[in-house]
Image (cartoon, rainbow, N blue to C red; front, side):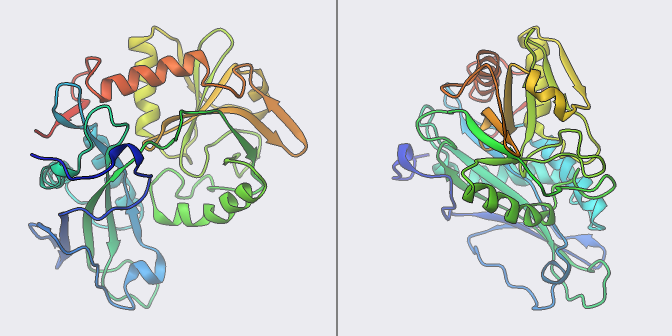
Amino acid sequence: MEKKNIDWANIGFGYMKTDKRFVSNFKDGKWDDGQLTSDDQVVISECAGVLQYSQSCFEGLKAYQTEDGRIVCFRPDLNAARMADSAKRLEMPVFPEDRFVQAVVDVVKANAAFVPPYGSGATLYLRPYMFASSPVIGVKPADEYQFRIFCTPVGPYFKGGAKPITIKVSDFDRAAPNGTGHIKAGLNYAMSLHAIVTAHEEGFAENMYLDAATRTKVEETGGANFIFITKDGKLVTPKSSSILPSITRRSLEVVAEKYLGMEVEEREVYFDEVKDFAECGLCGTAAVISPVGQIYDHGNMIQFPSGMDEMGPVTKKLYDTLTGIQMGRIEAPEGWVKVIE
């Protein structure tokens, strides 16, 4: 299929309307068959559950054109499983995981002309989401829901390369120990907006949230998991019941152990040991890894040996290997790459 006439090298990380999106409705206790539509407008009651009590969840994944010209998605089955977990926690009906993956395939196929060419630095970002659509005035789950997937081509998260960023230790709490921090609910991101705006106004790129119970352990940022590299080359990732199980982080753990022969440790990470790590990064779908050069903690600056000029050497190996797998330059573990066409 001929590509759209888009300046792929200069598109930003934002929304661009594409040709088709998938829509399915839950009513009378079951999901309908769903369909692709060109209509990008959502029409709901003024009293819809999503507007009254924020009953919504979402996912994010990408489609790529590989070196050999195929269009693929990266581990969409894990996005389907994570959305199922989110839906259960929010008392929403689970959209069947096999249908989720098929809808991803259908949306990518229908918008294949918007999949950026290999080597452009751009990708096709997919946003599956679900929300309560029927009227709710008393505090209770809605009766009807809508599941949708749209896509949009996006440029690289970093213009001019992934330069290390400076973040700050936040005075706000991201999630309570028995709250919703482990699911991808819209409400988790709404509560982080004030904190991230405040951080930006103070000159920082992101926040480091500590655990709400003791404020002694590292959790995550508003939208990414942390990874740390020890001075002897071990990958350490924070373990907590209130952080989102990042698909990128879980993939990096496999890459580190199976591809790079690194020791991997997922455990509680106490803030007072952060200063002893050699490298630090934030991992997620958008940027894969955002290197962290320094962390500001109430008047004290923690500076990592990897510095502020470039991504640390071990983090760079992790980044290059995972993106190599995603782009088809390196053979992927079985089941990681879903070929669209």
